[in-house]
Length: 453
Figure 1 (tube, rainbow, N blue to C red):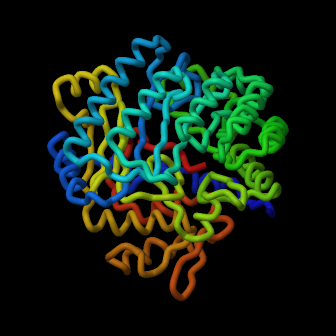
Figure 2 (cartoon, rainbow, N blue to C red):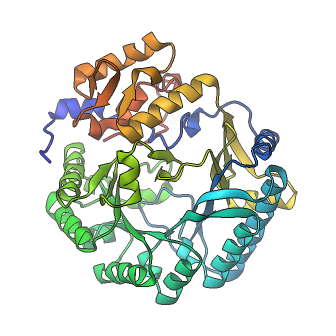
């Protein structure tokens, strides 16, 4: 691909705080009262849709150590009894939810995230899957995927995950350079990652993915070029290349990172361009905002066929109409409502011990929310917006998009808007034009989102 050249002043104008749009409305916009009673009603609505398939996400927050860059909701614990107690409460939540929504809903997708799911012992993973299979009807072709730390990968554990039906595994790599790894508190020799990938392939995983992060401390074009070369040598099926969000006020562990060592705005933009050129040049297809997949991969096929979806698990291939989230901080999308569990392990467990759904917040989507959600999903997934999907009032929607056409981020056609090659790098900025909630942020308040560059 030909590199996009953009002058610094223009890049600075685009570099603003903005959502990543794994949902619309985004979590900070969920302001109306929504608690256990509202979630219970959403689950009762789901009970009346017994044939509707669901996706299931389980949050396993455990890590032995918190990396400096991490923005995930984690619990620093390695003791088996702590994990066992957490699984006790996940089982209580499963029983509560399926007791209301009904058992044996068909499952199209199961994803284990964290934290570090492969920190669990094999017996604990087996118990978790048994708990899920006892309450849901897993489609024979259901995709089961799991996030994993390559430093904890063992032959026994990898083979056990495969035996439990997991077909896709995503390894958190972030960067291969030792100096960058030291700066983010994640020493991880390349040989360890290579062995983890080989174990997954030997175990029969159909998809082996790696996650990279650009914008980390001490990253430079020369160092990142070597990371990209190493990533390609692993021959992954998919690559997620995420933008590092430095928000030390919100994530105190990031205060361990020296901000002076972070790449500049221009350097960070160059790093992502390098990733695009490297992976597309190697035959991968650029998916949505920050994913790359081989042409034969399901994610690439879904993008080509206009059936790609985006939700709290990221880009997905088989969207079910509902997503049930389990575990502390897990987010669901059920019967026209978003819901998030409390993000603190103790509070999550106490709520369940009291027999209550452990809800922190939620949001019931209005008709306007639904229209804007469809429009934003189409932009984020299919890179276009048919005029029929422009949110109402239609004239206001077109009015918001015209400046983006003038900026060269969108191309206007008779029946649709199309994201341009430049616009690919600024999908979040484009989607923000359709967000009805962003203008409500009070001037002078701390930004609620990471920056778009």
